[in-house]
Amino acid sequence: MMLKQARLSLWMVPALFVSLCPVFLYGAPQMGDEKAAKAAATSVTGCLQKGDEAGGVTITDKDGKVWELHSKSVKLAAHVGHTVTVSGSATARSKAEEAKIEANEKKEAGGKEHADLQVSSLTMVSESCK
Image: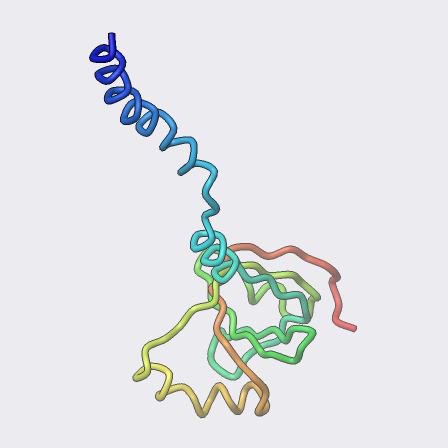
């Protein structure tokens, strides 16, 4: 009888571990994924303005940060002079690319903080800027 109980307990421990392991992993918080998603998604509301570069468009957020906007799918130029909310992901350039355009971006931003935004969607707030 003792031998049967010993064999049974030897099999019960691994069986419980294997069966409960997915439950614990599913309930574990996914911190890295949430932070990455929040960092990647950016929304900015403001007045679209024509940039200094050909076809360039900028927007200034409520904190005064100037965003240079880029998009192949959203027609940004059609909304210059409108108050809009744009959403997308902040883009980073290589140090070499950044060095080439740094002076122009600083001039365009008027000495304010600036960044690039790859726009995935645009929502019209108003047909004018106040």
